[in-house]
Length: 368
Image 1 (cartoon, rainbow, N blue to C red):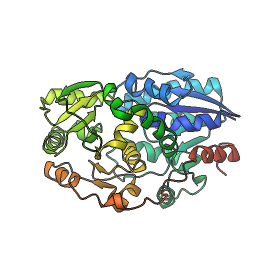
Image 2: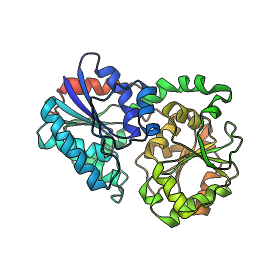
Image 3: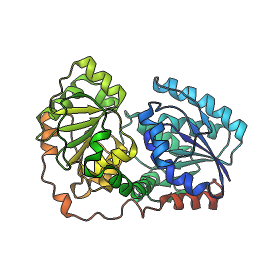
């Protein structure tokens, strides 16, 4: 079988690594990198560390509004499909790259395979929610990471071609956590941090907060961004932030002072895995990092009103917080009773890549 696979952002690189390894043993995969994430620390380093094959095409779309990005990608992906004539189009997650790939294939009657189908935050102000809903409704094979995702699709009348394969990000975490641990043991991780600004603290394992802030709903709202960093300044342990370029620009524009906060450049996957595993708590607005924290048994506070990963909320491993300084401080200071609770296998058995490959080959990329 021949598939065209669309990649464009950090979470998709992480998901692609185990699947490509399994699928390419007996099949052909054409990788298309849209260039949605083009910074080396948010793109190239993931290909190198995770052993992802070199992309066959790099569209290089770069930054731009959602409409501009999606439109440019749609045009280029259509050209690639017409040239390659694949048996199916595989897309991951909920980015503009995901929607562009799905639309281009659907209009050319190429079956669409959506990995990580069925997620819902039920907040259509989020571009990611729009992307995932639209992609699900034009997909032929919907490969879900959890039973909750399967149930979400059923509520929308989608039952054909829906399979719970487990979460492929769990595959990647399990394959790399020991590699990360061995690489960064005994303080070696400090040598690789690329400090940008803020106070340079003596970071000790389990004595720092790891934070990421990148969603437009937070970075584009001056009041919310000030509330978040005001809370960071008042936390009892230092805050380490691998900062998205867009957020870095916004902090400079607002002249936000950093004392309890240290900013570093975006970290590669292995380093980020280590930082997450050894943090006291993760504080984030990222969907993927919520899960990685859960997989690594690190408590998490999510700076959003909803999460598409409701499984992580069980037993308090993850808590949602409104963007108000006092609420954030209260949430990150909660007793961590979750550490006494075992985690049920809500995200599968760690072999999602094999399950996904089997599902695709069994149906020939087309749902019955």
